[in-house]
Amino acid sequence: MCHANILKSEIKPFARQIDLWHATHQQFKYRMHGKGIHQLLTIHDLNYLHEKHGIHLLKHKLEMPLMIRRSDTVTVISEYVRKDVEAHVPLVNKELRVIYNGISDIEQKQQLKPTFVSDADRFFLCIGQVREKKNLHTLIPMMRHFPHHKLFICGDNHWSYADTVRSLIAPEDRDRILLTGKIADEEKCWLYAHADALLFPSRLEGFGIPVLEAMRFGTKVFSSRYSCLPEVCSIHASYWDSYAPEAMAQVVREGLAGWNRECPAAKAAREYSLTFNYDRYTAQYLQLYCRLLGVSR
Image 1 (cartoon, rainbow, N blue to C red):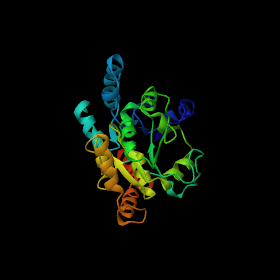
Image 2: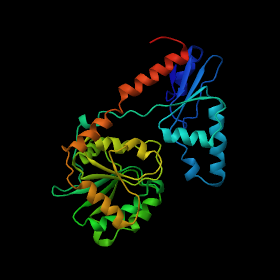
Image 3: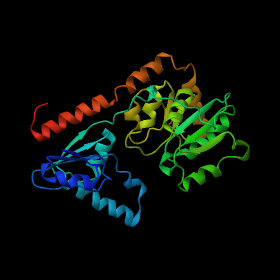
Image 4: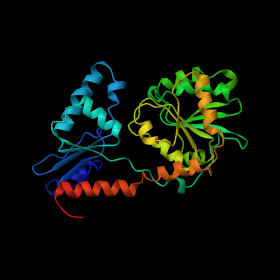
């Protein structure tokens, strides 16, 4: 068997010894095909259905069925993705199995306070790429209802949508609502550990790792009800049903009332997030590998 992110040059000497090829993401195009090689494909999302247009959408609509047809077994990272695949891509009797992502023990990692945070700051946090699907523009008018909080939007922001979000920030709020760009893992851990809440209004996620990471630190999570997020967050997040600023703010006020990192709800959320771990993830894939290869553990 062979992990799909190994360089092609490193694979070739072992081509005749490969029994199982696992392409761990649909965007990794290289495959090792050959007689007797079982092809396992992991699909993380079909976001192209919602993000691409014209010739780019057509390209993906042609590529995905081809990848699946060339695969013997397919795994997906959430029930949401499974339903999306079944609804939009012909499987032709392929086995399709959900194996959730693992989350590393992020709460055990070193922490580093970012330079953009002041000692007295109370703040909300948003983690992720600043792209239209993340729905971040809805947070800007909501923040007018929290004049004593800052909002740090952390993640790659080279897309034009980031300029759209910046344009919504009033001049008097530009030191209060910050698009910080990429941050180090140590800074991310510090922010999770000190934020009053993680705000995650995304419309399109295959899994949504930040919501589970925040739970590890006892941080209150506010989420949209779109895509996989109700599945992944379960009962351990507060959800927005309206994106009107006052309605969003009311959900946040109610969710934070009585919340602290040691309250029963925070502890329950942390215990829930711990069920998404790499021991379980690895064991499920090892079990699948062994079954596909016809060997015992």
